[in-house]
Image (cartoon, rainbow, N blue to C red):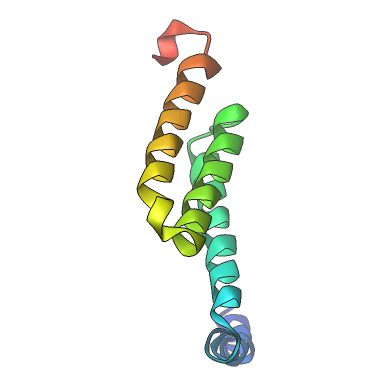
Length: 100
């Protein structure tokens, strides 16, 4: 088991280093988007959150990162809209008062 991890690390680490250092910054941003989306997916799966909350959380998380990367001058407006959108989805997404 330990040998497999070592072999994978020896093979993948140089490729990851070259990917980050030699390609344009937009590729690194794509890598960050991919890793953060997987992390959000794992977080929502860990708390057994599904349906509209999971989808909206993933989409709005991507929106925050893309806005910060591409349109920094509009970031505060986007952040406020994302938070309000999550509040609205949470408010109208659950019909049972025990989830309040």
